[in-house]
Amino acid sequence: KAGVTQTPRYLIKTRGQQVTLSCSPISGHRSVSWYQQTPGQGLQFLFEYFSETQRNKGNFPGRFSGRQFSNSRSEMNVSTLELGDSALYLCASSPEPGLAGGDTQYFGPGTRLTVL
Amino acid sequence: QQQVKQSPQSLIVQKGGISIINCAYENTAFDYFPWYQQFPGKGPALLIAIRPDVSEKKEGRFTISFNKSAKQFSLHIMDSQPGDSATYFCAASERRGGSYIPTFGRGTSLIVHP
Image (cartoon, rainbow over all chains, first blue to last red):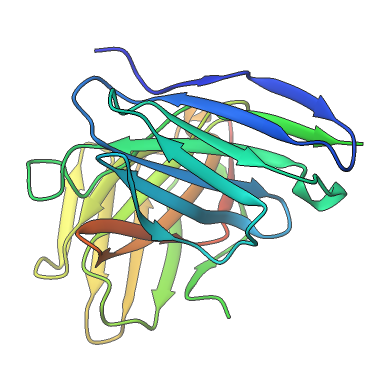
């Protein structure tokens, strides 16, 4: 089975721009979560989507948004980029909760976003 | 407020030695405790996980010890190898809205010298 894929792998943007990151989960996984990883704050939960609905949300401003499509692929968008948004953005997928392994998340390689 | 506290921040071990990483949590709603291993340029990968009804779980050279009353858990890497050099994250997950949402520790950078 192919793992979680994320595109692009690297991205450079300037302050004020917006960015869209893409994530394709493991085949059959319906839950997709997004995380921000920085040296200062570590791994922080952004939001989780299941069956095209945002089911959980972390403590991030409204500039961070996401969506999930009917094939479980997900995108996250950051508008009005700030220098502090520079981070590794990780996507993770998991099987449906309640099923075997439904409590485990499988991470992609991440998208490294640099905001200048 | 750090909900999952991980220590040490960095660890240097000789090949063949035992690496021990500790985590502590406060929220009793956490009911699933995975450990992740992350190599540079890669996403975290699940290493081993435990539920609070079990005090210890072993998989190969990796063992999780869990103390529910103390709200602490630890990862032991026996016979540490240079290939184990990576960053290790503990996590504590709770059910929210039907999903498991992990809260991560800040990570431990492990270096195993040959």
